[in-house]
Amino acid sequence: MGLPIKTLDTIVTSLGKLNEKAVPRVRGKSIYKALLKREISS
Image 1 (tube, rainbow, N blue to C red):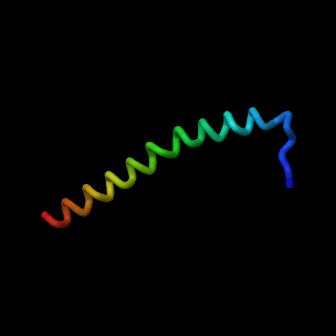
Image 2: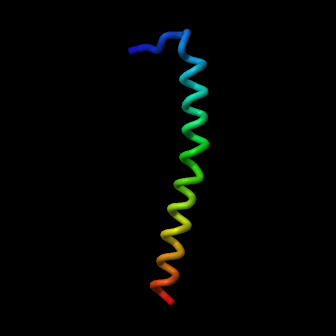
């Protein structure tokens, strides 16, 4: 299976945009979970 070379630039750009959105969400979720654990422990 291959990718058409014409669409490679578009795919790379789209993946970059998705990555920018995904990283803050993952960090936010882990911070939220850590805060919940702290509150439960307190």
